[in-house]
Length: 249
Image 1 (tube, rainbow, N blue to C red):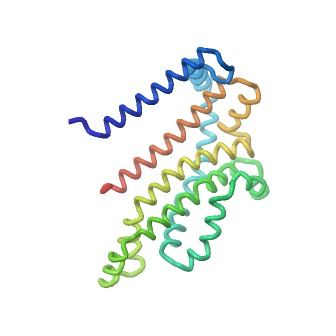
Image 2 (cartoon, helix red, strand yellow):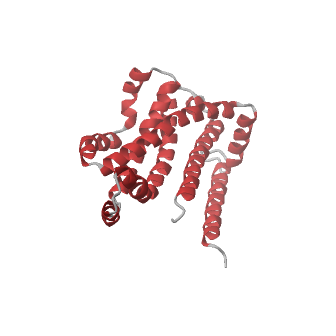
Image 3 (tube, rainbow, N blue to C red):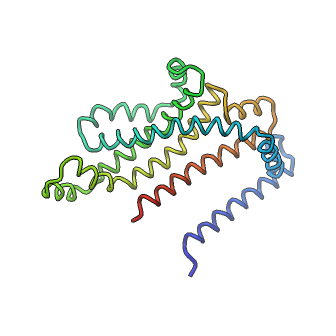
């Protein structure tokens, strides 16, 4: 009997191949200079990779991504646990979290420039803002969804606050936390590109601006594909961590 996961994998691969074939056909029809054939994009991608352009840009972007996302993940989980467990913390922070999560974060660019200047640090700060609130809200939701009967039973057996967090709240909230980390990883890539395009002009974002302004369309698509691959890689790494930590799912 074929495992369900393999069927889903084949379906996804078929969908991707169909999309690439349709893209190639549309590009060969020469309907617009802005829709080049996927084969030409692949050639441009390989050329940029070979001459080091993509690797240098991606390395710069990855540094900012890690510097922004790791603190966002750690602090997001800590703040989410605190908000979910303690009513006072939730009342103090809930309005701020909801406001900043729903606000267009690109509007905060002038404030970030004033705080950090135009350098790599401001890109990391943008990554942090894009991913932090998603992780907080998912962690909060996971803690609030903890079965109250388990909490009361643990209290009956004399569990203190630290034991409740370690044995009840954290395991119960872990699936929601890992979902938040996965969504936050994708948001982090968005924040990286926004920060590099609007503020620092470094990394993959700078290449997007350069190739767009000079109408090097195949190179532009090659960089876009690289950003999509980076987002996919971040999501898959978070998903792998999810499978490793939440074995009962």
